[in-house]
Amino acid sequence: MATQDENHTKVLIIGSGPAGYTAAIYAGRAQLEPVMIGGVAFGGQLMLTTDVENYPGFPDGITGPEMMELFQKQAERFGTRLLLEDATKVDFSERPFRVSTADRDFTADAVLISTDHSCIDYAETVAGAPLVVDTRNATKNVTEGREKIVKA
Image 1 (tube, one colour):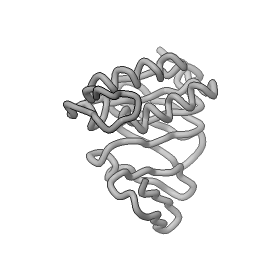
Image 2 (cartoon, helix red, strand yellow; image 1 turned 180 degrees about the vertical axis):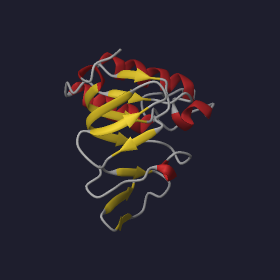
Image 3 (tube, one colour; image 1 turned 135 degrees about the horizontal axis):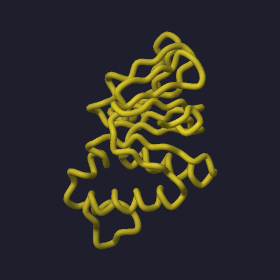
Image 4 (tube, one colour; image 1 turned 135 degrees about the vertical axis):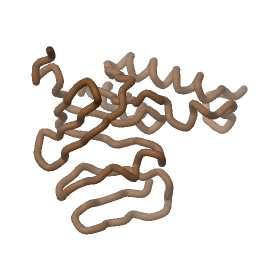
């Protein structure tokens, strides 16, 4: 059985699409040893994309799954620990924050939520909660009560 320290991380990322991997690469390069809960259907919308032709660095294009494999390799190169499990519960009411999967419980100093549109609606927060990123609308910032939701 894992100890509390083994399941504590400075940065925990929920979601494994391009935004999640970008966060993981930056956190890993900063030596924050991020943990990514990627979900059982990891990789985001790019896993369903046959041809990506508008991303710099790939003049002949690349498939979405191939791109996500490269993102994963780069994140792991900088120390990201990827778990192919779904986050089932979050608790932002106190620090450290708590995130659970079906198999384990984590505590984290920071939680980055980078899920796609199918997951973001259930992300409930409380006062003082970390930033919630909603990628469905890129045009405005919304503040509701004491919760800050950024439409990125």
